[in-house]
Image (cartoon, rainbow, N blue to C red; front, side, top):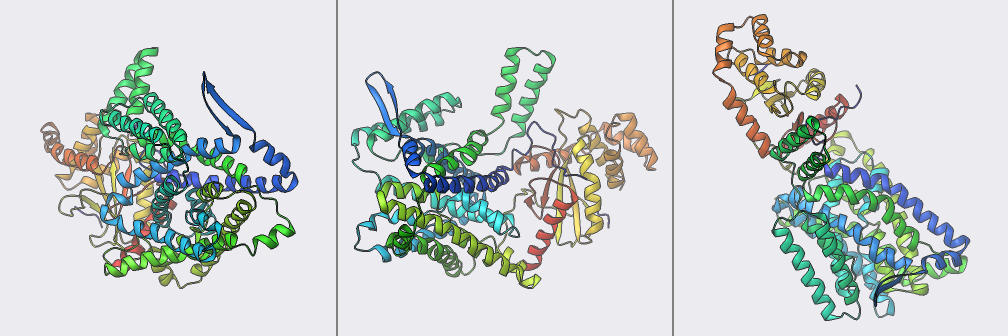
Length: 626
């Protein structure tokens, strides 16, 4: 069964790109890096122009009282302990997503980022302790170990544009471990005067959260009230309440949108379309929301707020340092500053690269990074940006001049780490093409997202049987986006001689009433050896897919029309189409068109430029591992 523009990104489904949260996560972090940098520079400028007003504003007290009960902090601490709880909620959400749907869903791959993340913290801490052993400042070791995920990923995209998306993904998995450990360090080592009863109350409230979650309760107001109560209890206990954000995020499971949920949402919307009443509007809204996992919904709500407002506000309130000649002379010889700078700029790369190499060596290559060593090295150098959590711990560990020296060290390390990563990326670009490809992509096997492997004896194939790259499309003959993608696929096959293309059926009958019949017509034509001819006609005439139209296409192709009609009446192709639908469900496909390139799901646009880049990357990796 073989036969030797603007950006396209639409899909037919009630969801559009529900299954691409990691891309959205990385895109948000990249965009917010500039805002975070601007906020940091604004804080520095403000502190050096008028330090008194800077400290006066952020030192302003703010109290919340209810009868005889109340909470009171200055504005800076409300940002650090209150708003930053939402930042760590997003960290917890992304950590849970990685465990449920990302690289870490294969638990065998957990060892490498776990060891790399911990190694990338132990070495910097050791360097800091080397400079501060026996000094009162030794207590601030926690400020020298944690990477700022948002800032680091954003700067990586800016200074190392040529690195593949998988390098960003690997960096994210490592920093997820980094963030989890850092929050534990805050809770254990930087919480003072712990009150057992309040801590027990917080633990009990969180246990109720877990119970409510196990009972399947999905009303957000329930979790919000319990979360506020647990936060207050932690605040009263003396434990840093930001850890609650991480815990609440880890509770929210992640999963792709199920086709059954999408079909139910479609039915509810149709009812509203026929009778637009407030009750049906509410039902349709609830149905649409329920099609998403709690993790998706919460990330959609909070991630932009934390990236574009809360973290920059944190930087504005904490990064202000008055820099003078006397301060510089003191900071450049301060063990706090030197310990933090060298911990991040030297310790982070050594820890991450060395730990990754050690795991690869001990497992004899059985566990290795999903990218090449040049990409691992770039991730190690950019991990020297320890901004958000580092500043947070510094404010807990230090005060006065020591805090200023710590802040200066954190800012200097972020600048040096960015410059070092840029230099490394330029050096990688000078390597010979084949060496550069191996250094960036590596030779590790990819996680396969396609549940049902391509079977040349069963699947409909276009292109050479032994092609290095296989592109699988789940499509619907009535889907307008599939029609838009078809010329792109043809161009792709024309430009790349060693690509084979597979079409699998996913008729979305709830939105395309003729899709199932069209798919059965293609299979009826396949019975007479004309699948691809019928495939092309159906996509070229998507508005004409009724039975008389299909019979006319069969007649035009010179098929045995009576046999074609009989096969349609007997639903000869229905079982095969059902198998394709089942494989789509198992692979987490909920809309059309959805592409897989060498078994890995292709996220994002499907214009010729984007698909060609995916094919070139898959071909390069196939050559390396062959």
